[in-house]
Image (tube, rainbow, N blue to C red; front, side):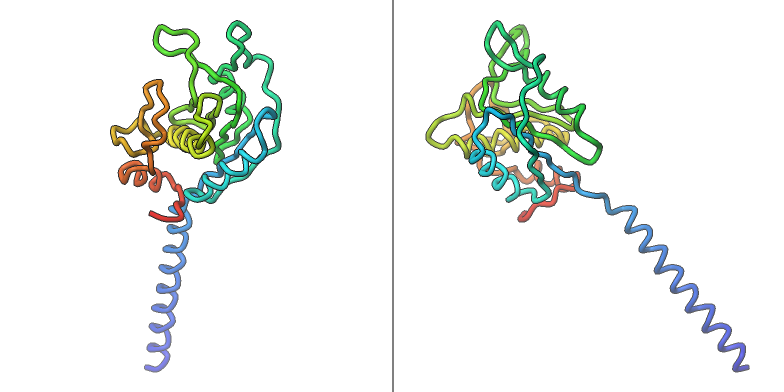
Amino acid sequence: MKNYNLFYVTIILFLMLSCSEKKNVVNEKEEKPAVTILIQPFKDINQETVVKITEEIKNVYPNVKVLDAINFPENTYYKERKRYRADSIIKFLNNKTKEGFVTIGLTAKDISATRGTIKDFGIMGLGYRPGKACVASNFRLNKENRDEQFYKIAIHELGHTQGLPHCPEKMCFMRDAEGKNLTNEETDFCKKCKTFLINKNWKFNSI
């Protein structure tokens, strides 16, 4: 009788351990690694500005790495308007970016893109939606609080890379600027946009 009891106890313990191990395997599969944001400064931009923007991004998304500054590829320069084509910059950055990473290029140069019937429209930022690359420029921003505005442009474009569209909320970072600089009115991601990013494995320091 004792042998039978010992046998049953052994079987029960084995089943409990097996279930526990299976649960751990399932949890490990469900836990996706957070995306790493790569900040790629171009050589024209001030290093202090890069440091400030990096610190601001880390306040909402700590998984960030800064790369060494690089030159613009020759094919990104639009000689007729003395600007750099944002779409060409993004293609260049996208080709360098591996899965699990998102690259944002930072520049002080004027950048542009085709907008509707306008072949070369000056912009502050551009990002693939969704995608692995985006670019932000502080060329068209106010001098008084340029770094703060620059951060908002950068985080807006990073939001696009995660699949976020423009947001109707006036205070949200994902608001459509419609060709203007409205960053002074923006304060944070709205609740809806922040929830979207959390579901994309963004690890906010605070919610």
